[in-house]
Length: 336
Image (cartoon, rainbow, N blue to C red):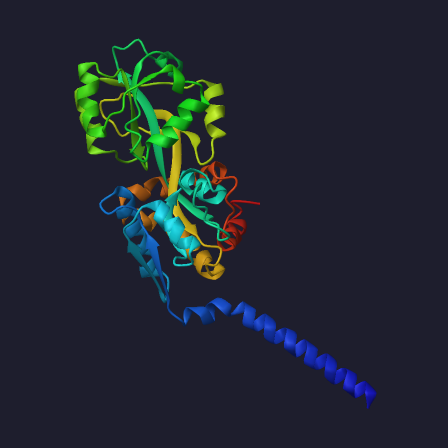
């Protein structure tokens, strides 16, 4: 009788374990029967970020069963704040803001996000910045900017703070004569000699701002080079890395452009369902060739996905990977 009771108890224990394993193994299959609807702050309306994030959201919605991602216009800082408040599971942002959000620095210094910290998953779009001069200039490398009239746009522009950080890191910020200037004024300033060098940028290796096209059209320009020591200092900056972008300027006779970069992509709340995040990362990665049909900005990720992912992760060493993303990258051998 006692032996039979033991056998019965053992049987029930194994049955319970089997049921738990079965439930765990089908957790996402069951979850897919329930519709998942998330909102995502996709950047300011009309910006390239908003366009790309909206196309990406539609791409995922069309391919993941019972999943819908609704893009909503708004600044990236707002997205991270809403995430911290538990109002969002995912937001669009860049590696610089992600580092600031996680460390409570920059725009989050006075109003920290609290316990809910951002987690990274998919850095896709590289924004690469570089310095240009007129081809006839005697300025060839970054160190030659000492004592020169330079514009990194205006302090009110979102691209200015990271650029200032770069110049501080390489010891040039206090040695240049900075001219605060809107992008729309750069072409006239460069041709008129008001500034001798200005900051330009390439979006996802495929396009740039219209105002910078005007600089290209009116200036026979040349990009400046960086020393190895400067590259190393740039790579040490939170959220930023050194990168050579594909040249999109026809008048600039260089195959690649050396500069600094940060990366835009999806960031998730630690409360976001790991299985849903896994599916988002998997779909984006495995269908990346099809993703380019949505927009040209996805081309770099299509052609060099692993390289861009590693660059994004390296730029944000303090921001943890979301468990759902980490699971996929380990399966693919992208991370250990």
